[in-house]
Image (tube, rainbow, N blue to C red; front, side, top):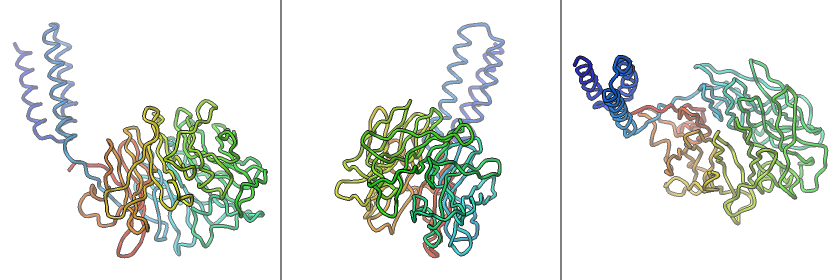
Length: 436
């Protein structure tokens, strides 16, 4: 009889808590389940055990249902800069570390930047004026990868892939290498014999992916590009480098992301200009030494995966028929079950262009949606088949426009870039999900 009274008392307490529909009530429900477990330990009857189990599931399920139906908002804050007026978060791991870049004072140079625990860290360079963390690097061990100019002049006159990620005034003139930053040290990654390399992502096994030049003068290169380049994996040992196979009949390739299973995604095509376009003839997946074309949206250019989660789901952007210059692109998601699917622009006037850059384990995708002139670009969140303007979900009091969504971690935290319409200053942001 005493146990039955205790059960009824627990039931009343859970009913009161779940009626509030708050996240706190769910935590309380989970905590009070311990009380049920204590009752189970002193109860021998099967019927009593079944009743306890039913009550736990029903009450906690009620709290969860009340929580999830409430609309989610994002508490958005700007991240500090290194003195310039242009910064962007390009990566956020599950520890909440944001990495990207920040211009220095005067906006003539930029450095790879880490925002961690409320502080900003200048990661420095490999001797040249610029560095950058350009892609979504999902490493949770404290390893950050990116690109940096060195102090060595570029003897072949190549602009290389890196130049598109640095301020125009200092974008060329030096060789550029992929780097690993770990425990306060930045170290260069080796190439395939050529002068330049580019690192994009790393997994928790210490494997880093990207691309590197070899010594082949490729006739498919478009000036000023001279040398061929191939997708590579560095590590897990220091200075280890392994070349990944190109898709049959292609000459150059680049890897853009890797997950903890060792699945790698990237592009394969001709040398071209060393950035997208015809080098991205094929969007590819490397798995167990085999390269597979994952498809396109109707064009054989700009087919660029940008991120892969631990399930093997891939997001990116693709070209469209009739537009080899990539003026208008379309974001995509690829899954093994459904293949490649486009992610349409936000339902806003004039929006025609989308790019996807981040995906988490819940298949939440972030990216950007723009009009044809790229005057109005907005960060999007795609989930459960619905495209949402992240600006519609931000908490009151934040006035800047969220322009780029670049990455999302498994807690649903988002980073990217915001623009202040009155000053045109562009700032890295962090958006943390909260309940209304």
